[in-house]
Length: 367
Length: 248
Image 1 (cartoon, each protein chain N blue to C red):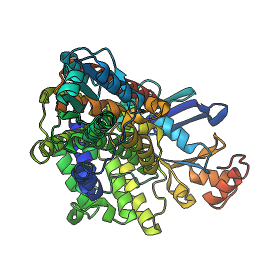
Image 2: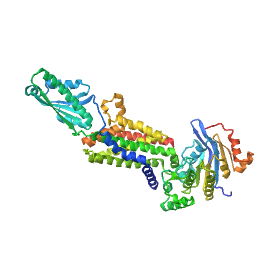
Image 3: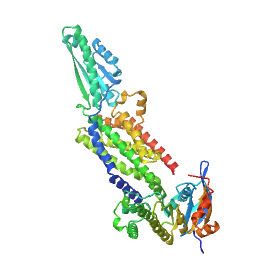
């Protein structure tokens, strides 16, 4: 135990004395939260939307056909009640829903006025805005054609509802994204660099010759980063609630448990990298190219996964961050319980055990 | 010597990497309190042999016993009974002298009061007391190496393994370093040292010279010089190493 504590203390000295990593550790999440919140553009293509047609007449049919013929939407036909719509939003099957009032055509032609409600999943505010704009445009198009044939103007009023994020705050994308990125950065990159540094400087050899067991060396190297990650998560969450005004809808406890799972996953990934890399530079490059880029590009943080080519979408599945970001969005923004994110949690668990198993195996070979 | 107390004993110790035999059936014994020089050109197999003795590399065949423990099965006990100093500087630069001492004392399981005494004694002996709270990176290389050696024997091991400890150090500091080695040997710590400096080989009680994975000669420096009809260890080494096939 004394061994263990002396070693952990040493790791903290390393981290606290390195000004640069301190800056990365604590400055980066804050800066990113602020910058990324405003700098993400999104384009939509082939997004699943649901139609709830309470009227089922010629006019609604016409509009649905028009929506379908654009390349933006795929129409989910199995939905027949507003309760199902709510379900579909929670599971993430659909990103928007279009609801026609009953007697749509009748009202439109005889009262010159009819209503359509558009609901969008605004956990990703940029995508939601784009979606509602596209749907509105298609409807306006129909209305204009209709008015061209008649003298009395018909008026379709569209009512837009932004689900989960009514004010379209950028925080709703940046908070989960930054959490996914920062935790991977600290846990995977910093851990791998710190292990490789010992190899590079020859201190690892001295540690291996000491009576301290190799697995104990490894565990004690990960503990400080684990603690720092937790501190960072709490900072981000505090900022998100009190500065960015994004509350935690779901269970804080569930969020923390799954976050710890994600941190463990990242730590195991860091250890895996450290068994592959032989220099700090290599560890850094592998982490940056192998982890950071996929997180930013493929996790759905900056660019929506739905728009990616098939191959990239497959590749995106390999990034733990993708699954974690879905978890954070669902738990934090939609208030989903454990069963809503069980699939993502299991994927993370599987990844963690695989990474740990492989790195332990590789570590033994090296000894 | 009346009662021989053997602390290292190897018998046909061999290490192969695929079809390359790095260490080929080496057999030797080292006695307690002896300063044993382990010489060889680069790539001769010194480091590989040493790694097997300190328990971080498994031999392919042969037997070896270090501090009374088997290198195959009892590496944990071996590690508790030896000290090690590698050719790379192996203290932490971003820790202070005191913190380094505390770390390694902690790793080797020294008790708090024991550690405090050792730490005081050590910094006193090296005249580093006033620098104890300075970062190690601020020390000159020679001091670092002396500190490194002191820390390698902080837990009073039976044997200390030194892998080219004086590389890049100036002659005066090297001399001081060897004084420390003598003192350790005098206190009963067996010293197993690899070196490139042939003048240092003269300081050893006995010297083995490895060529291409095999021990070609093993004796006291005086005997070796007589045997090879040489005036210095340098000449002995050149005569033996000239036949080497391996190059790094």
